[in-house]
Length: 392
Image 1 (cartoon, one colour):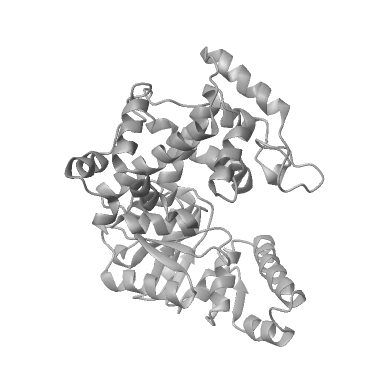
Image 2 (cartoon, one colour):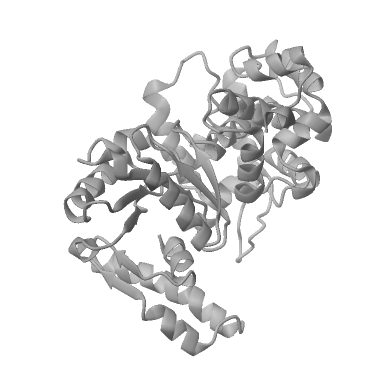
């Protein structure tokens, strides 16, 4: 919420920040002030410029202060019932024609829209954290939204210097849905014999700023845990599930913010150190399932990680959650650290060769026919001798 506030204030917009109580509001204000004080220290802004910015910044615990705004962006905890409560309040307060936007990473915007009397005014605006720095903005388009509201979302993105990508409604939209798949692939390799540190090193050497386990620690293990618990009722028992991340969360190891996750973070060390206790937990979980650990080369780690990413991205395009392959590339480049010089996963797949990708998927499918089922889009493109690029 603080990051979205800063992005809008920097664009010259007036912003009203509403929090549920004074403590939460003070925390939000403190987060905003900290960023601007750093800008003054670094010489990026003068004190008088920051004063002007703060003259457009209203802070309150009273929802009524939003009665005349053109757009409200809800950024509360990623819990459907909490968001629904907020949307019911907003529905009664926001003026007719005001846009109701949700900054959700995973949740069903259609379901959220239906608790209001005006689903045509409800849209998803998925900012990436920290929202004042990350450039990607997924604009999630629910079934009943009106076209001018979608246009307003794109207009806002331009004003606040974000790169917007249109996304359809599904669990995780474009970016997080694909992330879930290659995140699961990383968990599978970890359970099958690779250490989190070997996997992170391979991904870092491929060109990512960090590996998946460092990323999970940075984002906070509790976020993924909450999502896994939310999805547990619907999980197909035939789908492979790795318990290792849950075991770390049960110990309260949520990553950087708690000093331990997949890595240890002693004495302000942001990169993290390898943790022998984590290796013990992994080995213990392998033994429970009778997994005989395999050796994974760096090349094999990359081959699997990218195949999982590309295959799910192809499904996302096939289902029209993303309109075109280049939209997936933009999402992965600007929101998820995909190495720029490789052009994005769909461009990489074309360069690697879709037939090779399909051969890899067919090979892996023998181990796990559910997880590695090749996307129909890849099968069709190979049959026609086409590329992802041909769909742009």
